[in-house]
Every structure is written in structure tokens, then in C-alpha cells.
Image (cartoon, rainbow over all chains, first blue to last red):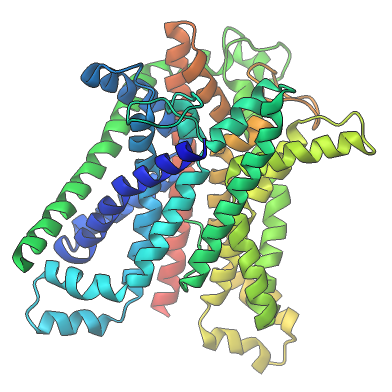
Length: 222
Length: 292
């Protein structure tokens, strides 16, 4: 289950992080003005979509497609959870990155512009390196969100307690384990493991908060 | 090499922007097209006439009204608990705390806001177990416990927005009160709080939205699929997000599935409206500081 949680969180980060980077490049370099503002508003709006709605739509939109296209298993798999979860953590990462890039000294960008950098070069060579701390903070915060999420993995990952050997395997995360075991209210060995899982999760997210603090940023709970 | 990198980044940027737009619009269109037809009086009240249902004269079978009432009572309880406490903590952090205490409390708030909601639910569950073993053998999970746990979950949002709303007040306004001989508390109460009011309110609205959508906490603290309208604070209850989750996993007929879509749409509209209200308030705050 630990492996399941880690695999899901890391893979989601691998999908969502470049996308967040791309969106910030768009907003700060390529698409200024109205379209940039629209994109930002969209990302802000994404934070307000309930997790359970993401999960529900994926169950009926994404899972049947995966089942058709890959013809492996039931479609409730690591892949389905990764795709949905990356959509869920995308706004968190993007907004942290964006706010860091916005706090940069505006003269930095003017200097780059004056030296004849194209917008993409400005972002790649000047803004991103200057916001390097924001880059780590965003990644760590996104990881924390991904590890802590319950509903997406509970609804989409299949919940078989096994080692995630492929993208199409059914996995169970620590968070889903807590929900599943307590919902059935058993008195077996599994019941004790719930508290271990809870402690592990708490320590993990505590470590995330500590890391963000060390990197000089604040977790604004976006 | 440099050129290729630039081109790669440009591609990535447009791809991710377009991909995100596509994913979100797919989600919205899919939900709207499947959920729209299901939104009518029967969705909320089942077969019961709506007047009887509203006055709680007859029980409701099959409608989402009890879930709606459950969610609203949860949000209410969570707000009663978290908003006053959160605003007070925010004031303390922004105005009173010494540097040392500030950094300590700041870390505590970070820790709280980073805690996964399921862990918060587990905390509530364990608290009930502990109560049972000690001095309250009849304790069980229910509305009050769920409200408290959700309140704890959204507390950091209220604290953070209160703190940043107070810290965002320009210095000349901040110094105005003391220069006229107001005490510290008079200054906060009569000058700073009214100025920061809208910012604080938008934070509270965001917290309410978060409280309405959370599922993992209530999963462990007393939500059930069929409970009717809760009669007391200790009762089990229904809630919108849990109903959506439940219908996704165990729908038995196409009607129930349609109800699931409609319920998801209702919840999305609810949180969307709250989000819009928060954004508009935030905007008006920003405009106010810019014009002066």
C-alpha cells in the first residue's frame, strides 16, 4: 500500500508538474493579456471543483475508455487514478509557481526584454531560474496533496492490496485503505493497520510542511 | 540546442494549456449533458409532495433533500466552530504574536492545512473510541463530530485569509488609529477589522466551499447512505458528496445513475457559486486599495 501511495503520487506529479510549468510559461511569456487571464481564471476555477465530482466523472468518462482502448482488466487502475489525480493537483502546483513568478522583481523581466530575449527565452533563462525555490516548493506541495487525497484513489484505483507492477494494475493507497477498512468496521488485523497508515500519512505530510518551510516558502493552502 | 529547448518549452506550454482547457471543458460538458435532464423536483424530494417534504411532515424516499439538509447542517456546524476561532487566531497572528510565537504557530497552521482529510476523519473516529472507553460509553459518530472535524479541516483557510487580509492593509491606515490615541484593541476593532472585512469574508466563503465538498472526513465520522433528515446533533446523516460517491459505486438502475449525475451537477453548482462569490469579494477588496 505504501508502494501504491508513492507510485500514484509520484506518477501524478510526473504528469501534472510539466503541465503546470507549461501553463506558467504560457501565462508569463507566450500568451499575455486576455487569454492569459482566462487561463488563470480557469485554473482558479479548477480548485473549486469538488474532488468527488472529478472522481464521479472519471468513473463514467475515463474508465470505460481505458477499458476499451487497452483491453486490460476493468479499467479501474493506477492509470485512471493517475490521470484524474494529476488534474486535481494541477491547480495547486500552478498557482504556487505562478505566485512565486509574480513576486519576482519586475526589473528582471525588463532587463531580459531589453537584451532581446524572446518571451520563451525570458521564461526559460531568467524567470524560472530566479523562481527556483518556488519550483521545489510547488513540487513538494503537489506531492503532499497527491499523497493525502482519498476520494480519487478510492473511486478509481481498484483497491486491490497488491504491489503496483504495471500501469493497469489495481492498487490500494494508504488513504483508501483507512476509508475501506473503517467503513466495513472490522475487528481483524486490518483494523490495527489503519492507525499505522494514519500515522504514516501524518508524518509524511508533516515532513512535506517542514520541507516547504525549509525552502523558504509558505503553504498557503491553495 | 538552445533553439530546440525553446521550441520544446513552447510546445509543452501550448500543449498543457490546451490539454487543461480540454480536460475541464470535457468534464463540464459531460456532467452538464448527463445531469441537466435529471434536475427537477423529483430529484430533490422523490415522490413526496414538496410542501410536505419541506415541512418534514412525510419522510422522503429516493430524493436528495435529506442529503442537501445534511450538507447544510454540516457546513453550518463547521462554520460556527471554525470561523470565530479562525478569525481570532488570524488577528492574534497578524497583530499580537511575537516573532518567536509567530513562527511556531505558523508552522502549526501549516501542519494542520497539510493534514490529509482522511487523517482528520481518523482523528475524529479515534476520539469517539477514546470517549467510549472513558466517560461516555454511549458516544457514537454523528453530525456534531463530523461538523467539528470538518471545522478543524477548514480552520487553516480562515486563519490564513484573516492574517493576510490584516497584513495587506496599507501602513498609513494602520498608523491612523494609534496616532489619534486609540488603544491597540480599539484600533483593531474599529479600524483594521472593518477594513479587512471583505477579505476575511471571502476566506470564510472559501472555507464553506471546502466544508461542503469534503467526503473523506465524513466517511469516517458518521455519514450513511439512508438516514433521512437528522433529528439531533448525535444522529447519523446524509451528505451530497457522500451520496455521489455512493451512487458511483453502487447504482442499481439507470434512474439512480441519472440521479448521481444530477447530484454531482448540483454540488458543482453550489461550490461554483461560493467560489464566484469569494472571487468577486476579493476583487472588490483589491480595487479598493488600488483607487486610494
